Length: 451
Image (cartoon, rainbow, N blue to C red; front, top):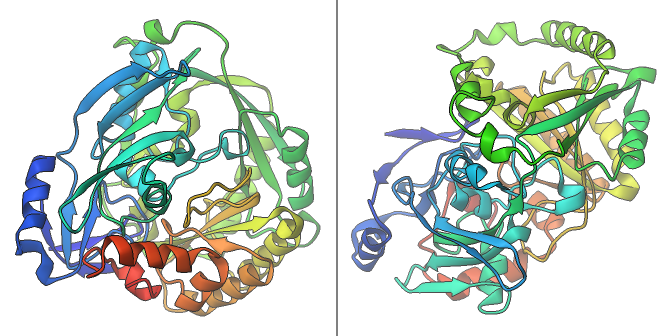
């Protein structure tokens, strides 16, 4: 069967194991069955490139049960659940308890195991860090068949290699995650229009205390309007009604799901060109200039706007797309992002979905993506002429001290990876320690020289 990531590039013929329990996964690793080819765990398949592609895939989709909801010594509520639980199912369970996940990426389809493996981030990294900053402990199945419980105080090296380690240290079975109180399901959203990139960054700095912050950028605008954008700021509405509003029939998850639209077929690739994208971006920017009044929206609409379009990846055509997400340090972010936008615009390539966020401090995980500064994500439809442009962008990212996001990557070179991830050698050493035969391996890991 052919598999791909969310970007639908590349694809790989793989065999799929779908164990129904953690014990069955352990039993399969104790036999010789999976080891004839490289193996990697696969959750919801929502990483964009080839990080969850290998000749043999071990699905975690049936590891979908809750274990406990307890109060820690520090007074925090801690959820322990299996790694195959989706963030959507977690939210459905904890919201009625007046609780929320402290970090959410742009999709709720991601599994807990995938969120840990990619150390996903959200619109609040500048305040709350990434997902793994709120993970208390992980149980991981090693290639030897041994199950290890690791956290910052015990087996810490394995913990920091697994968080952001793209599944290369073993199979995450379950995890304990610190939750946060929820005052309301609704978000108070403000939108601020910026005439160019510098104005947008200045607004982000000015509103650095906003809980959530994300900007849409017109990636094709040039000259004095380069980087013109709309900055969205959000705060949880201050009211104690989360339990009431989560009941069926109220403004909540189920109501939002009923309003979903489905993209039933692949859009013709020719529809996505520099003229249609420039026209859309100009119209969107002009529309948002007249919609700056604060408004109250559901958390679903704020965190997961694309989820209203099921199978939205089909909009890029049958050949798929590549998302290019970079992070640059604070001191070089403006110059670097400006150069990247210029390069993409001159090539006539870009997307409707260009997003800028501000990052807070990096954490201690060896391969986690965020560094203090800014991150820009650009979507490009797949075409042969795209790859020379991406190589030019790689050079600009490295020249400005940045790196690319492994969870979105489908073609980064080994040299680019090694220059930008300063702790890759320590990660490789630990991977050799915990998986000396290199059983856990993906297309991405082999391309990046990690085996």
